[in-house]
Each structure stands twice: as C-alpha cells, then as structure tokens.
Length: 125
Image (cartoon, rainbow, N blue to C red; front, top):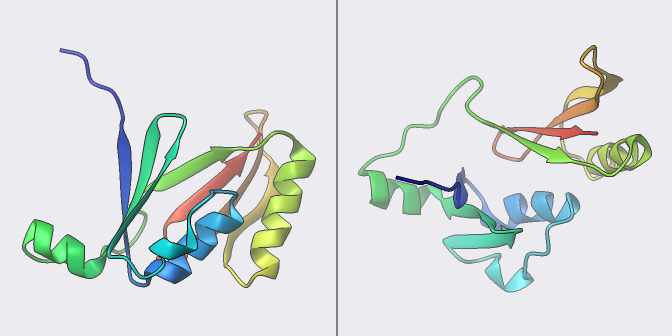
C-alpha cells in the first residue's frame, strides 16, 4: 500500500479572515472563496483546505475547539531576507507573532507566527 499526503485541512472561525492571512503568506486564493464554507488551494500537488466550524461540525458530529499546540505548518522561504521581510509583512498586517526570527541552533533561520485561528505557522530557510 502506498499513501501520499494530499490535503491538510484547517478549521476556521471566519473564512475571509483566515484566507487573508494565507494570502499574506503568498497563496493565490480567489476572493470569491471568502464567503464559502469550504475553500482549498493546491500547492505543488498538496491541497491546503479551509472549512468553517459549521462544516467541521456537520462532518464530525460536533466541534470542540482545541487548546494548546495542535498542528504546525512550516513554510520554506527562499532566503533569510525573504523570511524576515515576510515576517515583518505579517506583523504589520496585525497578525500575532509567536517567536521573532532567529538563527536556530540546528542551522536554519526560523520564525513562528499565529494564524487567525491560533495555529502555529513556521517560516524557515
């Protein structure tokens, strides 16, 4: 049996607010999806999907908001300068920083921000 990661799903409280965050990261997401209960974008064969709490409730039978660290998405940047610039752009738009850019002991430039639903989003080189 062979499996392939095809999709990562994120439950969102407000579709437009969440999609705007991921647009800031550079995803090309049509504005027409702002009011949809489900949206997805393909990046090199892996889909990033967004479902409203209402959709998640209908699929799972209930929805309890998670607390603590749930999942982290990590996005590879082209250079340390690009990482720093993207981090600054995210913060300037009012999104929350979890950890400012730093040079990690394992050799990568790294930063962590929070998406509007509290998920940790790592930027690294």
